[in-house]
Amino acid sequence: MQGTPWDAAQYLRFNSERLRPVQDLIARIDHTGGQRVVDLGCGTGSALPLLAARFAVAEVVGVDASAAMLAEAGRHGIPVQQADIAGWQPREPVDVLFSNAALHWLPDHAALFPRLLGFLAPAGTLAVQMPSMHDAPLRAEQDRIAQEGPWRDKLRGIASAPPILPAAGYHALLAPRLRSLDLWYTEYLHVLRGKDPVVEWAAGSSLRPYLAALDAEERAAFRAAYGEAMRAAYPPLPDGTVLLPFRRLFLVGSL
Image 1 (cartoon, rainbow, N blue to C red):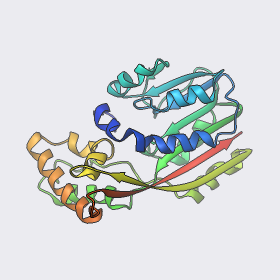
Image 2: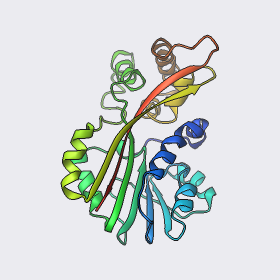
Image 3: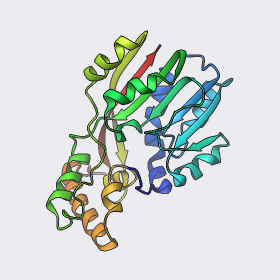
């Protein structure tokens, strides 16, 4: 996603649905908070007030690469920093390193996660949530349409987030380095409404790399093709609502 523009307003269209995993992850962090709490890949900053409330005596900081997202995050009155999360390093060890729906955009988790553990203070905690959706139609159809459509040459090399490791992979990678490790999956059933709501959901996140590489006419055609695929994969119920199953992997590890 480096260089891909984010649209904070589009992302926030489903803020209540996107906030549920944030709340679930924070609830499972067994740490007093110490002095420093960092939200890595904070986006629009929706988690920042919740982190500040949970860790009232700590300094809470949000970090993100997108100026558009940070402009929205700054409205919460909590400090934010602009930085590429792939290369970010803290000035001091972090007591709680929190990341919600961000690290799945980064490759080579076998190197990334041990590196993040190295940023923790003694007894520090890493708390992460990542979508586990690369095989679901929501994501798989994006790649198929990109490869089969008239824009395939222009979209060659463009992709959404890479697949994350299975839970066993993170356990093998992290458990030997940690005092405790909690891993779990949750599948949320998001009740969406409106015209092509699954397309609107994806347009705030995983669809953005494809759309950003196309001109206006191509974007409209790509969205139309993707909308047709999403209506087939997630058909509206009789009352017009759409259920979007969304699976997420959570991990909370402490030194």
